[in-house]
Structure formats: structure tokens, C-alpha cells
Image (cartoon, rainbow, N blue to C red; front, side, top):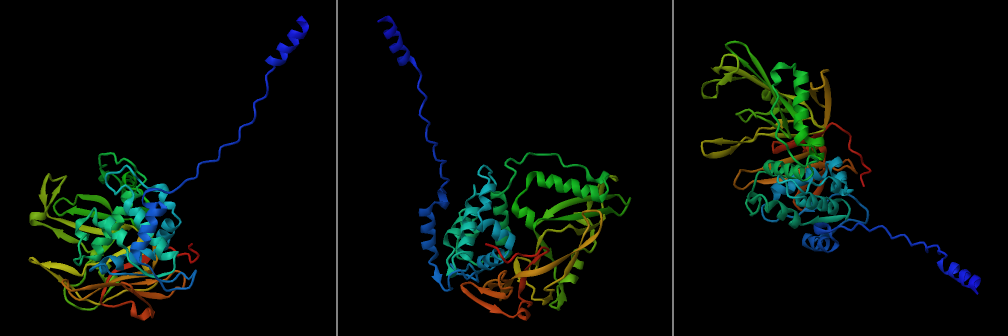
Amino acid sequence: QQQEYLRQQKQIAKPTAPKPKKPKPSPVKTLSGRLAPSFCKARERSMAPSHGYDGGEKLMTGLRNLGNTCFMNASLQCLTNTVPLAKYFVQMRYLQDINRTSNMGSKGEIAEEFGELLKNIWLRGYQKISPVYFKASIAKRQPQFAGSQQQDSQEFCSYLLDGLHEDLNRVETKKYREQPDLDKYDPITAGKIAWNEHKRRDDSMIQDLFSGQYKSTIRCKTCNYTSLSFSPFTFLTLPLPERGNSTTLKDCIRRFSETELVTGADSWVCPKCKCARDALKTITVWKLPMVLIIHLKRFYFEGVFRSKLTNQVKFPMENLLFEDQSSGNICQKSFSLYGVVNHYGDLSGGHYTAYSRNPFTQKWVHYDDSTVNEVRESSVCSSAAYMLFYTSIPFESDLF
């Protein structure tokens, strides 16, 4: 009996192998917030899309005027046809870079609305849409663009690129750093130091594509002490001749780099002389971006009034050559035109349109708000040109 009891107890105490647990399915990553399906459907309804193309035909989508928003639409069409930028957003790679913590941006709202706008332009085959949600995201943070008054297209484009940069800045916290004394270095080393300092605070896809670097040299006329400084730029703003004569883009670039006398109230405090001195100042393009946006300075002030220069500026479609000096070996970069923002009329009743080269067909397209037409290349260069979009890299045609 005792043996039988022990045998039963042994059977009871015998451990049993645990049943294998079924692996839990990995959680499905769902988009939320402004990218949630319900929000996207509401956004699409607000766009009131007009279907005009056959399925899969990636051609050209017009943007309806929401009340003097031609300034916005023209800039958007050129940015839409900036292929590396469009690819980055349409493939939703930008979501990995959104900076939700920065107080400088919109916590990703502007980037998300811009991304959704590009997806609807490139992937849906719409003939025209209304960018209602996108405009609201801009107006929410910049009241200048909230109403229905005409605005400057370059100012809007600058604000948009800056907003996108802050939303996508890979630097989460911008720490204060003392500016290094660049005068003790040669120009090549000084330029690299300044550029690295810039990238420590500002590093995004926008910077990768559109950011270049100026070199500023100022020389004291008394002791010849020379000081160097470097600054980043997104727009190369070029002066035009005061008279309404025809000119060339190369001439405008030359005028930009002319040496100017700094004197009077603007005189420079020379570090060697320790007092204000007359000086000679020269600004040149030192480091070139991959995508170069040239802003022709047509608008200027006469007292309290703003006027417009209507000069014809002849610019090349291909092989715009620039010297890049940042590497130490002066090399020439070649740029090709792919977009133009035009301004017609005066400042009170003017109108903006855009030309852009379609990356799929390689044909030039005229965007006049919701009206879109293919045009001959010969019509692209006109006295209405206000912003020129050039690229130094080939644009892929198999985008999406």
C-alpha cells in the first residue's frame, strides 16, 4: 500500500510541459491624428477633387484659387515638381523625421498637410483640387496668409520651406554655442567650420536640398584688416538694374557680387583699429545647394510706396554655370531650369502663375490656379519671371 501511495504521489508531482503559447501578432502600426483614415477622408472631401485623367496617368493637377491665393498656388506647383522633395513626401519617408518637440515648428502639422497635398496631386490623377486644409495649417501660424488679400509668392515660399524645415529638423534641441572666431583661419577651413556649426542646429531634408552658403568679406580701408563671415541661404536674391532695360541672369549675378563701400552710419567697427572705419564689403556664393531658387528682386520701396521693376531677364534653360569654392578646388556646377514663378500686373491687382517641367513627360506646363496646359519651352522665359527654380542633379522619372 505504501508503495502504491508513493507511486501515485510521484505521478501527481511529475511536472508537465507547459503548452506553447501562440506568439502574439505584432501590433499593426496605424496612422493617427491628421493622417487617420477619417481625417484623410474629410480632407479629401474639402478638396472637392475633379477627376479629369485616366487611371494611373501622372500628369498635372491644378489648384483652385481660394480667394487671391494664386501666390500660394504658383509656389506650390514649383515645389511639387521638385522631384526629390516630392518623392520624400509621397513615399512618406518624412514621417521618420518629424520633430514633435521643437517650439520652432508646428509639431509636424505643416509637414503632414504638405505631404497629403502632394499625395493627392501625384497619386490620384485629379484634374484640380482645393488645398483647403493645407492653407489652414499655414494661416493658423502665420496670420499674414490667413485672409484673402494678395501676398508675395516668394515670402510665402520662404515661410513654407522654413516651416517644413523646422517640422523635419533632425536636431531636436538647438543648443547655444559661442560663434568661433573665423578670422584666424583660411577661407576654406573657416567656411567648413561655419557650415558644420550651422548643421549642428539646422539639419533637415529641406536643408539638404535647398541650403547654400554665402561668404562675406569686409576689409578696412585704413589698415586693410580683413574679416570673414559665412551665412546659409535658401534663396539667392538678385538685384535688377533700376532702369527697365533688358538684362541677363549672369549680369544680375555679377551685380550681386560687386564690392560696395560701407561708410557713414553703416561704417564698420574694425577689430584692429578699434573704431568705426570705412570698409569694402563683398558677398559671394561660396557653397551651392543641390536645388537653387533664384529670387529676382522686382519689388522695391520708393518712400512708403512699393514699386515693381519690369525688366526682361534672359535666363538659360540648361547649363547655368556657377563656381563652388567650398571644397578648396574651384569647380563649376551646372544647373537646369525646372520651374518659374511669374508675376503679372502691379502690386494691387497682380496675378501669379507658374511654369514647371513635368518629370514624367519632360514637357513644360503652365499652371494658372486650376487651369493647367502644356506650353512650348520658348514661352517660359518672359519679363514676368519672379522666381527661378534650378537643379544641379537629374530628376528621376520613375518617381512613385
